[in-house]
Amino acid sequence: MESGSADAVMGGVVALGECMVELSLSGSRQAAIGYAGDVFNTCVYLQRLGASACFATAVGDGDPFSAAILALMAAEGVGDGLVTRVPGRVPGLYAIERDAAGERRFFYWRDQAPVRQFFDLADVTAFRDAALSADLVYVSGITLAVIGEAGRAALGAILAEACAAGVPVAFDPNYRPRLWPSHEVALAATQAVIGWCRIVSASGPDVEALCERPLGEVAATWAARGPQVLARFEDGAIELHAADAVRRLPAGPQVKAVDTTGAGDSFNAGFLAGWLKGLSAEQATAVGRRLASHVVGHVGAITPAADFPPPGSLFEA
Image 1 (tube, rainbow, N blue to C red):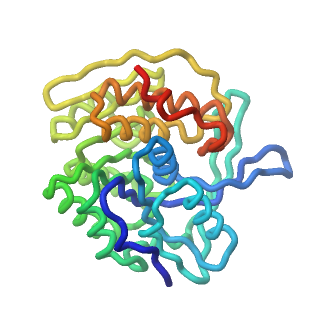
Image 2 (image 1 turned 90 degrees about the horizontal axis):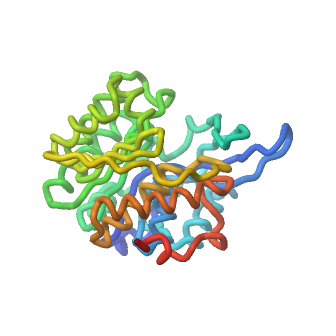
C-alpha cells in the first residue's frame, strides 16, 4: 500500500471522495470510458479555475483504471498527496444511460472499491494535518455514504476539529438512497455534518427525498445553525440562506442540456472558486451557473480541457 507525498499538502482545497470508472453508453454495445465522481469532478473544475485542489481517496495499484485516474489527476493538476494505492483492488464503476433531453440513469458496481475503507487504509494523520491547514475542506453525502459508519466517525472528528480551528467546511448532501443502510442513518449523518459547515449547497430533489420537507424550509433550518445554504431549485432558481436573511435569485437563461451529469458538481466548483477569491455569494453563484451551463453542453461529468472556456470569462460580471 502506498500514499502520495502527503507532507507536501498545504493550503488550498482538501476534498475527500471517490473517483470511479465512467462508462457513457452510446448504443446497445458501445460505451466511452471516462473517470468521474461528485467530489472528484468538483476538484477538477476548482483546479481549472485556479483554486489549488488536493483529492483524498483510495484507488487500486497495478490496474489500468487506477493508473488512468492518477494520470487524469496529474494532467489536471489535482494534488495526489492524499491518494492511497491498494494492491489487488480496483476502483468502482458506473454506467450512464441518457435520454433525448440529456437526463440520465446510473448503474453502479462499487461495493469493493477501496475508498470504502479509506480510514483503515490511508495515512489518517496526514489527512487530518492537511485538513487543518487547508483553505477549505469539501465533502459530500456520497463521501459520507461510501466510507461507512466507522469512516463517518473518523471524518466527523476531523471536521469538528477543522471547524473549531476556523477552517471552512463545504458540503453537498448529494443523497443517493442505495448507498445507505437506511434513510434514518443518512439523515442523521447529514444533520451531524451541517453543524460543522460554513457552506452547504443542496439541490431540491436530494433534500426533499432525504428530509421529507420542502427545500426552502430545510435550507432555513440549516442556515439557522450557522452555514450559508445555497438552495438549488429544479426550475433553476437559487435561494441564498443566511442565519438572518434569505435572497432568491431567479433562474438564469435556459440552456439546452446534452448531458446533465456533473451539473451540480461544476456549480459547486464555480461557487467555491468565486467564494475563495472573495466574491459575494451572489457573484459566486453567477460563476457557478456559468460553469454548469458549459458543462451540461457536453457529454460526461468532466468536459475536455481543450473545450474549457478561459477561466477569466467565467468570473466576468
